[in-house]
Length: 503
Image (cartoon, rainbow, N blue to C red; front, side):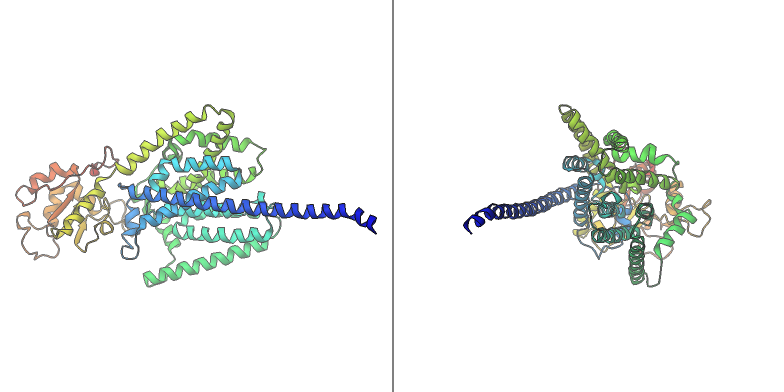
């Protein structure tokens, strides 16, 4: 018996060692997972701090929609909108990093994060209260959770369908905010159905369920605010595409996104973006090359579709910037491996070319239109302001979202020509700039009687504060010489501007 027991002991020992080894592996994996979770939480905290500083330091004006389609409309419903958006921007940075890590590895993800942080356009735009900014964040999160076909062997079907639900839910919110975002998900949806051999019914049913639920939620929300049933995406397409009202705000050539849009938002990152795209298409040794190529084709398809529309803006292609940044991150990682001594010069080059632009656009360019509202708010606190008039192109400044006082204000309107003859339509602002003197005589009380009580409701009375751009100063000074108006403050706005009326 003793001999038999001695013979079994080595086996028992091996079994115990094997069990201990398994336990150690499980513990190691748990520790690694916990470590990764802790590191990403720390990273997110640092990114939030960075973007909050970014938001608080931003003193300039970018686009009317960051005020007039957001904080002006919901002035009494929101608090600290820039801080709120800064948190979202930080989450966008994190998920850009996470998507790069998912598709490549840690070093590439680190370089991607560097590009995201150093990008002047991210610093300029990500913290602004634009629908495009939140659209960009939600899009990159949805792309991270998208069930890419190349991961099908690594992730169980149950986990993939959960990821699909998360991705589709975020995509639905994107499409509600910006109906044009549907171009992204239409492309990816068709690609997923094409590449997936099994579970097609499950994919289609989940997509239909989330789509119907999102439409119902959107309709209920719009009904609450409008007081009637309105299908906003259809209205959006009808007004902007069918009626071409967007052309009222400018038209651009078909190549604008290629010749100006992408070079503008990427600047000195562009060579690395292009080199990264070229290398990714040709590198067949990448584990997830097909998913990466799908992202690249997605960018091309979206730019093609957007180029068909005459009205174009930089912010419209902002949701594509994180993908471009991932391509640049891959290129920088490749350079760091092949040219270790030269990568520091690349880093210095990117810092020196992006940081000054970020500083200029966030602290200098178009600052005056924000500073003037800060000045008027201080004057209002002292009880000096009765009424304010803005004789300038409409939506040139923030409004009540920066003033925070219930004071009468007016501005020259620029309502789009809905159901009107677009060829002959001239808005109020254009009428004013065509002949300022004639417009003021026709639409305002006599300047000499500005202090008298208004008797004709059709004529505007003169406010005790007028806000104008310097371009009008020479024209209006003679007109106002017999009045009580005098210059009380002047603010620098910009060194250059594409609209002479705003100089």
